[in-house]
Amino acid sequence: GAGVSQSPSNKVTEKGKDVELRCDPISGHTALYWYRQSLGQGLEFLIYFQGNSAPDKSGLPSDRFSAERTGGSVSTLTIQRTQQEDSAVYLCASSLPVYSGNTIYFGEGSWLTVV
Amino acid sequence: GESVGLHLPTLSVQEGDNSIINCAYSNSASDYFIWYKQESGKGPQFIIDIRSNMDKRQGQRVTVLLNKTVKHLSLQIAATQPGDSAVYFCAENIGNQGGKLIFGQGTELSVKP
Image (cartoon, rainbow over all chains, first blue to last red; front, side):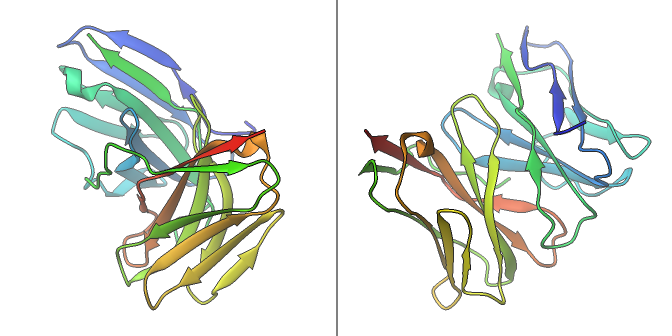
């Protein structure tokens, strides 16, 4: 596609339920990133993929958070047993192969509200 | 993970004036820097980038300046327009940490017509 595509754009879920957020990167982009942005704050790194492997998972807040990428394209971020503090915008981004200097392009985000 | 403060700095300018948004970065090993613009309800939009072997780079109406001595980055917007109103984030890439970007706090730019 022309840009990074994320779905759903908005999700309201009950506390304790699991959610899956999907990201479809720009065609040809082998690197894929997940960030989280709480209301009025900056972006917090979660994880990035180079191909299907995740060299850096250091930003995942807890073991309730996981992400996978198969086929070197679409990625899914899963949050298990959601908590109210998980409410945020989850932003996906992609770029050409990871090295310092490749422009990283963001999607519009998935807005998650846990009630 | 990295976090930011709760209150965004705000810069208010008159339409047509030049804007300067500043950012202090944290790691002397950072070798690539990017400015993003984020409008309400949207994802960050790439504006301009600069590598650590440069101290200035110009784009269309925007200029980024890098001072590695004091770890400072600035974004200059010429002839600011109402459409420039947004939150602006600087981001740094630390050379030995792959593609991970560390984002700054963000500055809210408000342009008065």
